[in-house]
Amino acid sequence: MTTEVIERSLNLVLLTFSIVLLLILLLVMDFKIGERVYQKNPPNININQISAKYDLFTDGNTLFTSFFQDLRNAKKSINVMFYIVRNDELSREMYQILKEKAREGVSVRFLVDRIGSLKLSREIIQDLKTSGVHFAYSNQPTFPLFFYKLNRRNHRKISIIDDEIGYIGGFNIGKEYIGADPKLGAWRDYHLKVTGNIVEALQFVFKYDWSCALAKKRLPVPKYNFELERSIKSLMNIFVTESGQLEERMVQWIDKAKSEILIGTPYFIPTNRVMKALVAALDRGVEVSLLVPEKADHLFVKSGALPFYKQFLQSGGKGYLYTNGFYHAKVMIIDETFCDIGTANFDQRSMILNKEINAVIDSNTGFIKDIRTAYFRDVESSKSLTENWIKQQPISTKLSAVIARCIRPLL
Image 1 (spheres, rainbow, N blue to C red):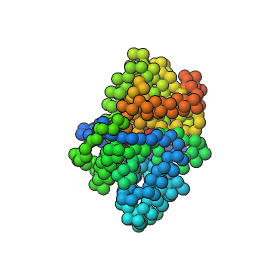
Image 2: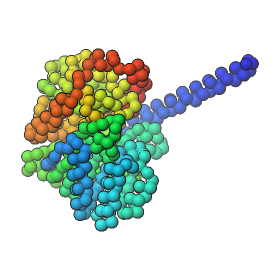
Image 3: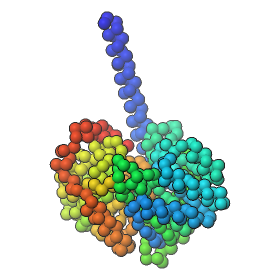
Image 4: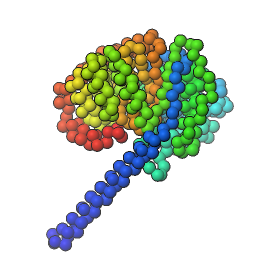
């Protein structure tokens, strides 16, 4: 090989390296600027002490039997929003119901996240529209700040039927959510069916997200135009968060804990502030338990959690690995008097980036007792998370943890 050829090859390598480095810098700048812009004045939608009656679903088959029947019974309107919908049999069953109701004259609006439901086929969308279903994508990435917007997802799952029945929680629409994915097995999740004034509140959130989707940008939040009825004993707070708002809430909730914190989440990659709050709780004698799946459903999330697992255990926390399939529930129970349940995971993406919606129950000890019982029932289907388990992880998982450390906010 001549000197000229070697020199040309080296120049090509340097050029390629420079282009890659420049691209990475541009992406980082895009993300950081976007983060600053969107965290400056995030929409404030917190609806406190609203009347609600609710039923808890922890099994997909039971949930979708109820949900689909309520859709079939709709007389006036259906508003449905999910992060993920598929092209599979379960998804097509819902699409068929939506089409049938639209043909009957029911107003049907169907909103899905642009990236979460990226694989939704154009044929299905067109078929829905032809049948009279109003369809829209939430959070379509646009310029400027394309990379930031690409990662800023609408992770909410809300359904409102005839302004009387609402659904909110962790389930999306797909075969894995009824335990039909052979790799993940049985699926554990938490979802609420609600009635009462909370339905009107969910409708408000849906209409806001629908308007933003049509405008393809974030809009000012309109004033609430409904009365909050507080005569019913079962009360609930609704926290609608994005762009860092959830992190602040998490810290406040954890700081108030006096004796016990129970956390259930599929992904444990907290922000530094939230992790410090957990360690501080442990230091002041609060017993903190963490329930996570042993299996992983996304690349890097398991390896990304390893350093946090280690810090959590070394600080005195108790950890459990769910082994009876995949654990996807998102719940935090504090002192047997407070329960946070909704769409947000215990990770940086949910805390500082995604659009989420969480329900907080702090006035119904009966419900909190029931969900606490469900939590410990899942603990019985788990094994202990230990430092020895972390050490025994394959070298590939430990190596991928290095990459995961660099992209934690995106996991």
